[in-house]
Amino acid sequence: MEQQTTDKSEEALNAAFEARISAGETIEPKDWMPDRYRTQLIRMMSQHAHSEIVGMLPEGNWITRAPSLKRKMSLIAKVQDEAGHGLYIYCGTETLGVDRAELVDQLLSGKAKYSSIFNYPTLTWADMGVIGWFVDGAAIVNQTVLAKASYGPYARAMIRICKEENFHKKQGYEIIATLARGTPAQKAMAQDAVNRWWWPSLMMLGPSDANSPNTAELIRWRVKRKTNDELRQRFIDLTVPQAEAVGLTLPDPDLKYNEATGHWEHGPIDWDEFWSVVKGNGPCNRERLQARREAHEAGRWVREAAEAYAAKHQRAESAA
Amino acid sequence: MSKAPNFSGPNSAGPIPAVGEPAARITDDASHDASHDASAGDGAGQWPLWEVFSQGEGGAPHEHVGSLHAADAEMALQNARDVYARRGPVVSLWVVPSAAITASPSEEAGPFFDPGADKIYRHPQFYKVPRGLKGF
Image 1 (tube, rainbow over the protein chains, first blue to last red):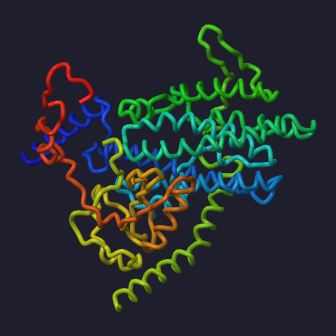
Image 2: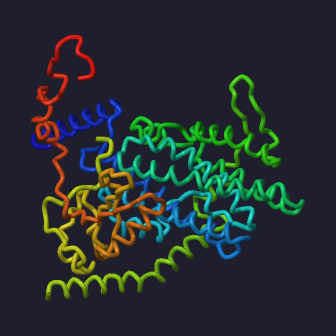
Image 3: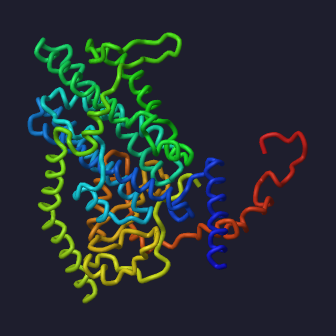
């Protein structure tokens, strides 16, 4: 009897929640939400936060080898932004009742996923350009839409991130544009980076709609507003003219403009490669996780020192 | 309302960890609800959670911008600068222990704010001025 009452009120709460979603209302941390909405958001937001943190590694790789002081300053600022973005989203995720330490554990233990793109190596300086242009470009396409997500803390973190991300994309494109009008060797380096990063960048926007089991539910709850394929199409349409403008080609022989739809059509994506990377077998998966674990361990004494310092001052204040 | 802070609100039940206490002692203290208690941040082995408010130039009020973990207030302020004020113009930052914030109830938001909803005489449109009078 009592169980029945609970079910009924749960049903009513659910109905009220769905009505709020349909009305376009923003869901806030203290509002009632279905468990499934909460767990889906924790999964999606924590993956996003982890991606920002792991995303510092491929670019951090080039800070000491940046070709000029200007490029070095930009790269340091960009990598610092990525750390900040990770923190914004971790804090947003924590409002759902999950602990930061738990999220970090999930990343370090390999239980949590992060964006497949960061498991590719950064072989040349041109990769810094292409990452800003493609990877941050694709991230902007995705995050601009997420800035309208139904969960308030997520949407607000996205708005903050989008404001900073445009600098990332532009500095990357400038690197590529500079190389593309440089010596033949520099142009070849830029073209090589474009060739290596194009397909992984398309994959980064997620599996095609036919193989994305979470999409329908997330769109119904207005967490996502566009499907992966829609986001991918937008990214391609934006990027093709940008490649043309710097005289570089995209490595897809099937890429062609469809006059009727106004969209660029692309050739088949190698989803086997995508799933292999997602499952931990990309070129750098192990290296990335190892670097994160080492950084976490190497920072342990700093965390302990900060705690000891805070405790000492707390005692001094109590005594005074 | 769109600029409502995103802090999770205080843990209404259970003790509030003192600011700046080392994580180990907070662990002893915290009665962290295993259910979906939105006031996460004071969990095991973790620095307290702080809410960050920032003021831009031009006289606007301080506005909630996010939160962070820090061992003490000084560290919270420095981290707030690095995380939430990397680009100007910010002229002032506040950091407040999340546990020190008392928030209005979300499930009774209707009744709680009801007294403000039906007093049209608090708005200028309620009052009439002679017809044809311009620039009042």
